[in-house]
Length: 382
Image (tube, rainbow, N blue to C red; front, side, top):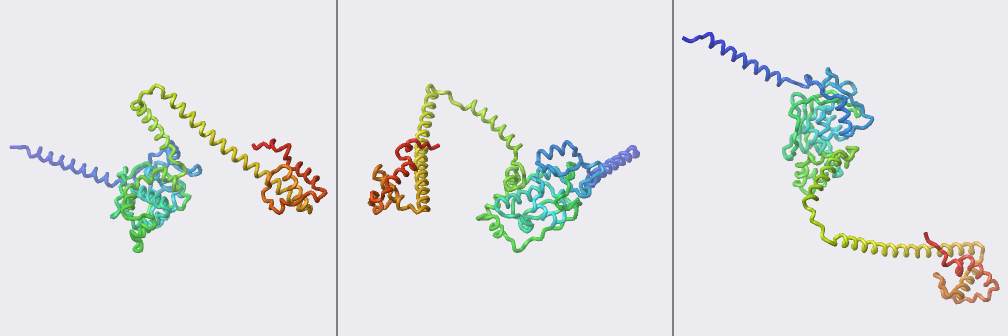
């Protein structure tokens, strides 16, 4: 005979274990945003401000233990840390604000996937000289919400690949002062209506793509458009990814050192002399070219000064009514020095200045003005 009591007790313990396990599962599934306490501290906010380039005048707040993500204080909006990693920058772009307003949701309701796709499309459209409208977004995919109010993105005809590191609600949230008229409390999402007037051809015209395959390729690798350099290029970030540039610079130095230590061939005898000879030859060529350029500039400057002096003297003579005497004086100087004067007609050159009793005086005055005999070699061009 067996012991029915012991058998019954075992089944009872098993039932209790199963019931306890189901209760644990139900409790885990029932966890909502109201039960999540923020783990963000003041030091974390300082790190966020530096890493994601917050504006200096932007007001941020550390949530208290009684605060929840879905109910921010009056005048503030909730922001998740993963939204910053998804390329959310402040101030938020007008395109993002319009989409949130039409959908009736707040900033923190967008999942990592939804935020990264929307920001990537905003950058893509701006980079192509266009603006992402809610109609264009609705044509490229659907924003859908779950029971907890979280918004995701689905697309049937575009293969958009984004890796969502946050599989559930997380506790890295904080508050930002709402200076942009965004919705503060979480709301029930209103789906964007699908625009019947906007098809694939219209999208290609807006983005200036030649075919649909090009659009598919750009959207397939949309994650590259949420890089800090692209955000800076289209005006969504105030910094051009300095931290990324510094990290890249360090890695490049290490790789160059490794390559140099393994691939640099031994120096050949006389190679340094050859290098010095080539450098010297290049310097001489540049010096000769520079000398020619300087001489051309000096000649142009001399011609310019001569023309300016002649024109000034001619204007003075015309104002005083002595243009005739001026021409005679010029002819006298031409005959004496043998120089040719530009702009002097044959009829003017053949005139006889001897008939004018004042020809010698005019010649003397012109020589003083132009200094043809004494100062011609003393002109220095700096």
